[in-house]
Length: 380
Image: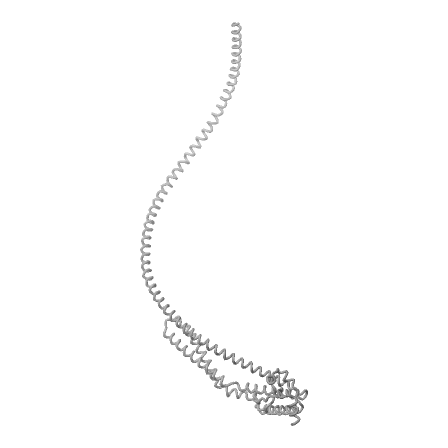
């Protein structure tokens, strides 16, 4: 002891690196482990501490005893897989009954929704209201059943899974302690244990952060629920106002329909009277047209008779003219031949007379020239 105190006084930094005792949660003896916060450094700095041979043997003895007790606890723990059915039957009877009732309520809710859809277009409003009230009752019972199921699931956790988790954590702790013992026997350090403690603390810190975030989110959800309720209240007010407006518009529509019905009857009668008047006018025009058609048919018959007689007359006239044409053609040929002969004779006579005239004119000119010359000589 004096040598240990002297060695401790010679190493003033050793007291700052002395391990801190952690209470055991699994029934094992307390274990002294140095944490990163105790020496102001990280987990690597604490893990680099090398224990003396005596301290190493003490730690190994404590860890071996802890491993033995943990192994003993694991051996006396009942087999969860063998008793899982009993635990499930013990815990799940009430939950199964609640789930069965909830399924029946859901089936009834679907049937009522289908009935309401079938009754929506019918005139039987009382049956529709009864179905609507029953839907509200079933919906309320369904909400209560869901709350009861959630409460039972929260009050009755899965025991078998919890026991399995405890066994897994105990086995993991035994492995870590065994590895730490081997590490102490080899090098006198306990880095594995320090890193495990450091990792678990970081995980616990993260868990605390998650829990805090969950609390913040729960507060936000509560605030949103309040906003939602306020919005629902505003929506209900708007719906009430819109329903009042719809009622007013329905009254206005009914008034317009009544006025439209009266106007339609008036316009229908007016249109009927106008149609009757136009029909009478058309009938008069039709009778006038029929009279005109009869007169036209009479005139057409007369025109056909006149046309037939005219055609007969023209045919006879054509035949007569054809005969006259033949006679005149023959006469033309005869007269043309005769006149052609006369023309030829006259032409020859004309030529002879022209020759005689030319001869006489030449002789007259010669006689006049001789007389002129004789007169000129007489004058000289």
